[in-house]
Length: 399
Ligand SMILES: *Cc1c(COP(=O)(O)O)cnc(C)c1O
Image (cartoon, rainbow, N blue to C red; front, side, top):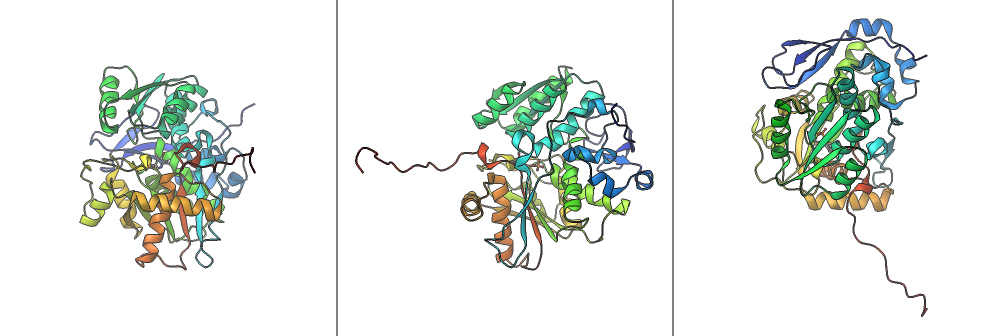
């Protein structure tokens, strides 16, 4: 018999105007063209759910069922999710506590698994049969894997410079993959046009309400792993910003539930590459909405997002937590990746390495101090990305 979980989803709410929308129906953006946020009966949850019993469950991010929107267990799509480990950079930093949360251990090798698992489970629950999205890489493979797992069709459109490994893993896991001659936003426009003709449902970042709920579990899990307390600062590599927005939402919900041992929340640091830094520019200009970045370039493809529909939610989260936004160069990212691999034995993805480059820069600028506990997010396994060539020639015939 499958175990029954109580569901506390009460409604959805526009992230900008707070206009309410009914749960249990298919939604994309709000009437104002902004992301919808899931809202729960947190008082009911507080009375019914025991924090420590919940945390003692198996199932990785699926253990947070009562804080998630899925109502029926048969719609849960599981591929062996785990709580991702936290690894201290103890060789590089003897005094400061610098921790890496390694999201590369999740199914499909990236934290996109969290968001897409929830988006796909809700699509299944709401009766959708074909999902499509544009992607620079990891989102596509996570969509493909979870959609195949529940028998839903998936289609992915990639800019033609997307690494071939991402296109190949995605196709192998059951999605139809298109390689298009345009950037991610051009691919997105095509997906949207086809969606409007009824060909499929558009699952683009933040254009449906449930990916944030999946990414929210990073914040829940981090709090539980740290003994229901939180670090002083969190460095997050920010593309569409789903994870940063999701973690801020997690912390608010944990506070409302009274599950945290402390009430001061971490400073949220949005990290971008200096070749594509719309959020950093808006932060520095004091703006709430970010102007699209022209001529985006960085080898850290996961954060090459020139325009984010949740820009104001990212910027609100950064400012209200007393954090900041910071851009780093591709050279600094590569150096950070090399030093962490060589000194700590930890192979980060470029976006994860960007958070370490940003940490070093923030320490040098005095924006973060040695007595602050910092968590850096490594969002994907380093194995999916190009590496420097290796191998010294050894002649075994003449030694
Ligand atoms: C998607 C992605 C990001 C950005 O995540 P958001 O939450 O959308 O900002 C960063 N790094 C990698 C490797 C990614 O796949």
